[in-house]
Every structure is written in structure tokens, then in C-alpha cells.
Image 1 (cartoon, rainbow, N blue to C red):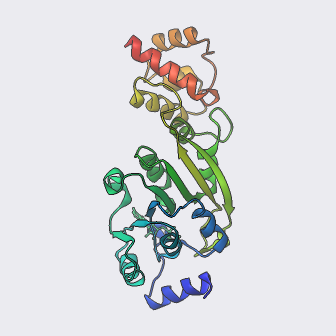
Image 2 (cartoon, rainbow, N blue to C red; image 1 turned 45 degrees about the vertical axis):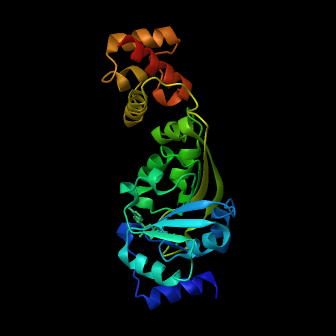
Length: 271
Ligand code: SAM
């Protein structure tokens, strides 16, 4: 049976009406599904976030040693338990991914998922801090472009710096709206994120560092001096920028990750 027929059949059989609030857009595109699962190897433990009807799960179960799925919707859990009852390499967890301690679920796992779009950024910022080193996710194209941008360029946002600090990220495939039931409102893309052995730059106080970046992008149109002077006292900030040879009229969005690290580190030392 084709994936599209199988999806419609399963939805009919279990009387499923996709829940928009849970970001339920089921993937029906063979090529996209195989690309998401492309880097899965036979000795891998995979964590799949939001398995839904289990379309991607079925592929993962054939390729990996173990697949741990985390799904919030009870209705989906019922389908997954039924569909995969004969498999002994699946573990089904009925929980909210945002409340799960990923490091306790598996040691050395890869994450693979077609993510619920309403919480894409929250999920990615959570998993990037876990011990998982290899992440392949299908997400909104706009977010994918932000995540994979180079800091200091047009597409960059606070999340760009965040990801770039921890990892290398690249878009490996664009996926059109028609590849889902129901069609989402936006275009999508598959992103591969590989964690670095250690963060790209040395930062003395990560909380401060990310706070400065976040504040800067919330006040994107302002120059550096005005955007972060509520975190670093104006006089100190002028002094720090002078020491680093950064023009105070420059906008923070033009700064590199290293420059933000230097601002943050100098302030930490001065405090
Ligand atoms: N993997 C399936 C596919 O590719 O067709 C479904 C993907 S669908 C975009 C997102 C899935 O994430 C849905 O099954 C939804 O119920 C689930 N989900 C939504 N919020 C969640 C959360 N907070 N924790 C775990 N799963 C969640």
C-alpha cells in the first residue's frame, strides 16, 4: 500500500481528525521520510519525537537497533501500541517532550523527528543542550533557515547564535506543503544538526552570554549600545566596546559569535 493510502486508511480506522493544536501534520512523502532516516545505522538507538501514526517509526524500526518514541497524544499511543505490538525494539513513552529528561531516556542516542511546529524552537533548544550529538528534524523552512544561517548575516536570529555555539547545522532537503496530510500553512525543510565536541567559543557565563544575544535580537533595530545597556551598565559597555574595537553605533545583528563572547566575558571579569 502507498504511504498516502496507508495514512488515510489508518486515520479512517481509528477515526483520527488531526489535532491542529498538537501540530499534527502527517508526512506522506517517501523521499522525505527516507531522507530523514538516511543517517540511521543498525547499531543506533533512536529517539523519535512525535511519532503520530507511526509512518516514520516503521522505517526507523527496520533500520535501527532500538527506537524510543515520545508522543503526547493518547490516541496516537493507542495506534502505535497496536501497530507495533509484534516489534521488540520499540519503547513507547506517553509524555510531553518538553517535560522529558532526554539524558535519562538513553545514552548515546540520535534524535530523528518530524516535529510539531508549534514548539519547534523550544524542542530544539532543549535537545541541543542534552547529550544527543546527532539530530535530524523536519521543521518549518523559515526556522530551518534561521537555525542554519551564519551569525552576523541577514537570516540570523538569536537561535542562530545558540545553535552555532553548540553545533554545525545544515538544510539537507526542502519539503513542500503537499507532502503532508493535512497540508501545513508553511513550507518545510529537513535539518541535520551535529553537536561539536565542545562549544565553538569559550564563554565564562553562558546565562549572561545568551541573555545579551536574546536582548539584542528583541531590540533588533537599535544599535548595540541601546539594545543591551539594560544588561550591561552604559559606562561599562562603552568601555568594553572600546577595548574590543567595536563601534557602539553598530547593530548587534552584525556581530559574530566570537564578538558576543568577548563582550560577555569582559563584562563577567569586570563585574
Ligand atoms: N511523525 C509523524 C509523521 O511524520 O507523520 C507525526 C508528526 S506531527 C508533525 C507531530 C507529532 O508530535 C504529532 O503526533 C503530535 O501529537 C506530537 N506532539 C505534539 N506535541 C507534542 C509534545 N509536546 N510532546 C510529544 N509529542 C508531541
